Amino acid sequence: MRQVYIAYIKKIFRSKSVVFWGLAFPLILGTLFYFAFSSIYKGQSSKSMQVAVVGENAKTHPFVKVLEGLKYENGNPMIDITYATEEEAAKLLRNSTGGDQQAKAVFGQSPDKNDGEEEKKVIGIFTLNSESDVSLTIGENDMYQSILSGIVSAYRAKADLIQDSAGRGQEAMNIAMESVAKDTSFVVERGMAGENKDPYVPYFYNLIAMMCLLASTTVLDMIVSLQPNCSDTGIRVGASGVNKLKYEAGVLLAVFTFQLMCLSMALVYLLGILKINFGGETPMVILTSVVGILPGIALGYFVAHIGRFTYGTKNTILTLITLGGGALSGLYAVQVKAAVEASSPMINRINPMSVITDAFYSLNIFGVGDRYYRAILTLLALSAGLLVLGVVLSRRKQYESL
Image 1 (cartoon, one colour):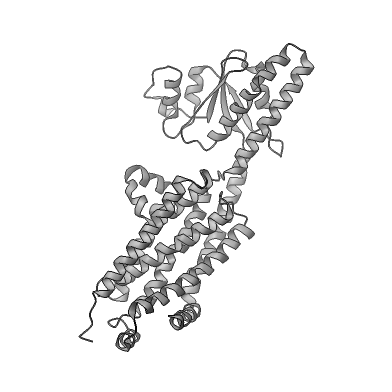
Image 2 (cartoon, helix red, strand yellow):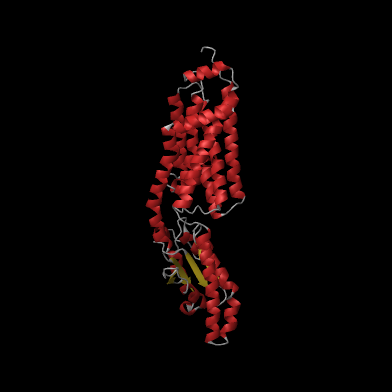
């Protein structure tokens, strides 16, 4: 198997088309993503978060003073405040899944069927019940939910300090407000830096997933060339009496090594040079990428052993699977994956590219936890299942006519 491994490593690196599609093309595509999306997000990431404030004497409320003191490094205010009544705030709440109706339910109002036509202009509503009691209403799944919630929590933690200082003069009040503002700023900065809320980073998740699945095309090329009905090399290998499974294992290991090297260089380029923030710890990002290669190799091995079709037919089948999987996972438009999840979630559970991107998303938003482990286990299960099916199909083949 060692000689087979070395021979096929050399063969893979000598193939210009394999090197281009396995390494050069993903790097080119990643560079295009970077220049297309980075400037858009940098402009958006320093925009003020628009919120509504509801309550009597809201403009003089201590909590509003804290909000007004939150600023970005460039001096732009983090919070853009709109003072409104409960009804006005409900209409302004911005939520793609029906935030206006949800807000009205929170405020005990009857939902209006025509409200969905109103322009939604805020991402959350702060309700000032008293000096120490502030509540938050926010649109479901809004990416700034954790930040706004953190602001309220930080304020509540210092609310007693504000009340105690109120009776000791303006100077004591100013000191208390500075303390609250400092703690709240820390919460916001941590929230903005901890999770990568760039709406375009899923394109880079899909780029890595695509690289993992491209291993399938290399495996298909190499395995089909070993089949007696497809090439002269396959006839010689079949007549040699070598252990077929060991031979193919050497080929698969060579492809895995090549793909691992390509992924390593791509990650160095994306993380080290382009400074793309995947949102998770770098070792876990690398581990996820390595595991993602396995279903790509297994898929190519399985398709290579389907029937006695020609190489062209099998390549067409594999191309349809990989391109279709890429489309459904959001490679061409990130909104597609969400639409598939809403209509046919099972597709996302068995589509390797969707599972890989979900693993990256889990690292970014939730860290290493149940959802991440579920994605990794799904990738391993898909890989094992496809490999077993490939072995079964391989052993059933007979070439007596040759």
